[in-house]
Amino acid sequence: MDESSAATGVHSIRCRAAVCRKPGEPLVIEEIIVAPPRAREVRIRITCTSLCLSDVTFWKLKDPPGIVPRILGHEAIGVVESVGKDVNEVREGDTVIPIFMADCGECADCLSVKSNLCSKLPFKIAPGMPRCGTSRFTDINGDVIHHFLSVSSFTEYTVVDIANVLKIDPAIPPNRACLLSCGVATGVGAAWKTANVEKGSTVAIFGLGSIGLAVAEGARLCGASRIIGIDINPDKFEAAKKFGVTEFVNSRSLGDKHVSQVINEMTDGGADYCFECVGMASLVQEAFACCRKGWGKTIVVGVDKPDATLSFSSYDVLFHGKTIMGSLYGGLKPKSDIPTLLKWYTDKKLELDKFVTHEVGFEDINQAFNLLMEGKCLRCVIWMKK
Figure 1 (cartoon, rainbow, N blue to C red):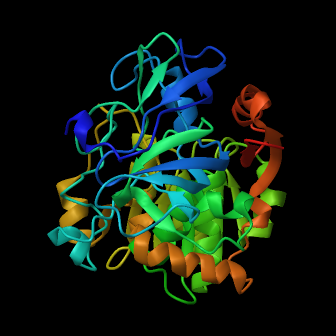
Figure 2 (figure 1 turned 180 degrees about the vertical axis):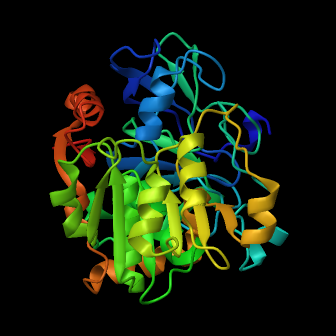
């Protein structure tokens, strides 16, 4: 895709962005140049963005797929500023959510109800735009700044492929709608779409960070009767009750017992659904060991290191009839399932308010990183203009 495919009459924009210049060091707020959108692309003025643990993970990463300089951020909401050629789905002034998972509406996966894994624009942690691999960001010296997860929302303006954009009702509060770009939607979707949690069932959740609590919220909405939260921090239990968690296990106070032993004893043979929300291979195996034989499901939601491996006994898999499955973005199809979650929010079924514990202005974005790393917040919303 060459420069001639850029939108006619649309010019580059100079704006502020929080750029990751060195891994693990504070983001630098600086002026950048955002190029016009090319064919099937949209340029968005970001209203607000929230910080996800994945942003922190890639901010620290020194080796590929980590790369600098880069504009992180992937949970956001904004307004369409301009559109490239062949964009008919949205227009200037529309309120939109950019989503890291593509939904092209054309490939076999996107046309099927069975998958949310677009094969035309597959999920990958690439430094450029999904169709051509080039960047729409440069610094004031003309040097390239890389993209992140097809969104890059830590900037006043970004360019996103139309397959990663969902138009929404502008009446929905932006500091709530942005949560559905990733984390909260991932957890709720894992319970609702991937696991299909049944009413009256027992759920065990390994890790009570924002994703684990979103799984609890999803399990609550599905009517689970027991939701057991497992974490190393007992201080999380009181807050977890607000999300539907009914029982708590402190995995650091079990003596010689494995967590799976305790859960098996508590549930008389294992939970119907076990969710691993930390990103640790050993916890996936613990979760699998305490999901019920015959129909138990273990759902992997946490993001582990790229080279992490899982090891299971062939006997356990065959003779215990359990299922293990991955859940990327909660199995949600962005353009058909997110409108459902937004309706649940406006109908006061899905309680998004309790996920937002802090809000800051763009100039304090590094404070948001500190709050998340210190375990003091679930979601910190960052306003471009506060």
